[in-house]
Structures are given as C-alpha cells and as structure tokens.
Amino acid sequence: MWEREASLAEVVEAAWVASGAKGDLGGRTVALKATMAKLHGWSNRTIGNVTREIEKSRTRLEELHNMNADRSELRKESGHMDELLYKEEMMWLQRSRMEWLKHGDRNTKFFHRKARWRGCKNRIKGLRDDLGILHSEQDVMSGMAMSNFQNLFEADQGLAPHTVVNLFEPVITEEMNAKLCEAFSDKAISDALFQMGPLKAPGPDGFPARFFQRHWGMMKDDIIEAVR
Image (tube, rainbow, N blue to C red; front, side):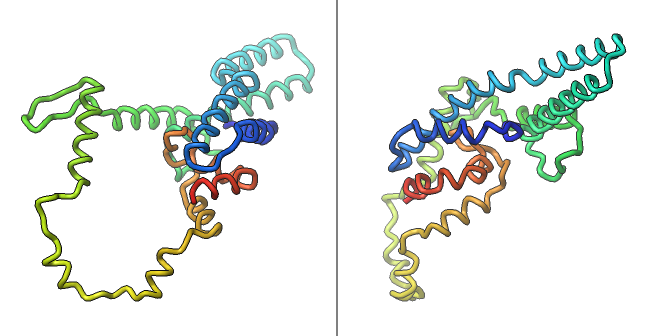
C-alpha cells in the first residue's frame, strides 16, 4: 500500500542513512527498526487511516452530488476514492497472503475474511505438556516451545556415531569442498533475495521481501556486508 506514495523512496533512504553503521546483522536490525518507526510516522501523516478516509471521501461525494457540483470536482473526488479503495484492497491482500489473485480483482471483503481466517488458524490457544496437561498462558507456552526445539536439535551425548560414520565412503572431493566453503558472492545473496515471494510473511523486523527487493539499489551494500 505504501508503494502508491511517490515520497516513499525518499523517506526510506533518509531513515536508512540516518541509522548509522550497519556492519553486521545486529546493526541492520537496529537500522530496520528505526526505518519502520519513521515509516509509521510518515504513513500516519501522509496516508492516515484508510477506512476513515474512505468514509470521508464517500460523504464528500454525496455532498457534491447533492450540490450538483461541477463534473471536474466530481471526477477529482471520485479518483481520490478509487485510490483509497485500491489502497484498502492492497492492505487486505497483503494480510490475507492471497498470491493467486491479481491486482485489480477488487474484492476487499473476501481479503478481509481470508486475513481473519488466517489469524484464527495460526493462533495457538494452548499446548499440552508431557503429562497431557493443557496450558494456555503465553509465557508457559513460550517456554514449552523453546524447550521442545532445544531438545529436538541438541546433540544426544549418549550416542557414539563414529562406528557408523567410519563406514561411509567419502564422495566430496577436496576441490568440491573448497567450492562449498567459498564466501557467498554478491550474486548469490541477491538471487536468494529475489527468489523469495514478495509478499510472504515478513520476518521479525516486520518487512516482507518486497521491501528489500524494491529498495535493493540503496540497501544492497549494507545488506550484503551484514549477511557476510
């Protein structure tokens, strides 16, 4: 939705530059948080609440019709309404994660229902522990999830894998291993980014892949350095 505003690129670049050094992933995370904060402030000033703005525009159109206003005024307000409706559609399209529908297939109510369905479907209301007891407290469920994955991925110190591993015939040559261990190239990092679905679920920073794809020219050097 923000991409419809011509000033977006300027706001992103100013916020990104002002965030300072970004030599590693930690620095990049700080920069993204600062950029997101600037974007929220800019959005509130520039776009405002889309739903509320639509109602204002609808009221204004009714007033113009009742006043038998000039056609140019009606066209202008009607165009403004269309732009707001498009923004609302894109907002719910992103929240619903519906990729197979093309822009222009306006059905905001459908997107809204889909987004709400995803929210209900993805919400974890409770977890059962090893004793079968159901827990619904957020902090308890967080601890259970953390413990589960720690146990799942930690090495089992009681196993002695060497007996089996020594039976393997090596298939990776020294030359192949050297290539596998090479540093990532700029192209490899760039290709990985642009192979991501643009509007897939965003990461912890709140930005979908499309944000980085759109601003890659400005962010490329900092992101590549941080990844390495």
